Length: 115
Image (cartoon, rainbow, N blue to C red):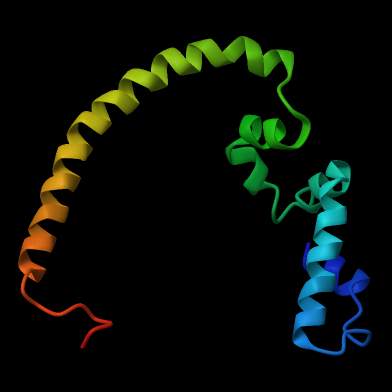
């Protein structure tokens, strides 16, 4: 992907860093409407692992839900929801206790922006 903006965004035309950033954002915004080109960024052998790890989610982001994804989603939800609930029931009290301890230890000290 690195070579694509370098080839299409011309730094010589930009008169400032802000103009270069604007041109780059403009290019990427246009490229977003071309999912076939974006998928091509990940076709090279040395970066193919990035889409093989979470292929279903990547395809969902690029092309929308397929019938295969919709058929498998309820099973994945039934497996993932109880796990997420159990982790939340453990993590939430722990994170609340930790943040409470941090805030109690800071009580009475001036904030960083006040010092």
